[in-house]
Length: 55
Image (tube, rainbow, N blue to C red; front, side):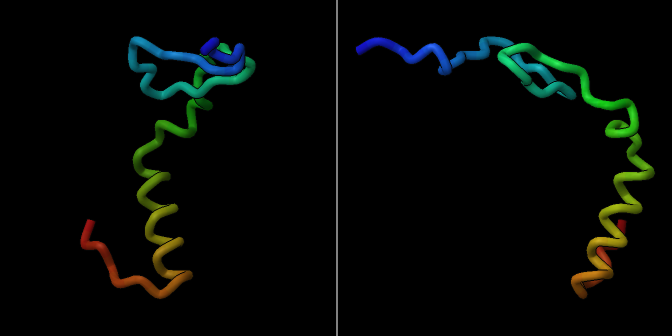
């Protein structure tokens, strides 16, 4: 059985990247901001009524 052209096997991990048109792309620099990620998590938890995660 032939493998479709759209199938792709990645042999090495690509942390912090995503694929577009079969090409690894760098994520926006703001996506690496851990402080902003923490704020987003907290605001999201508050909005849906989850308890404080203690982070």
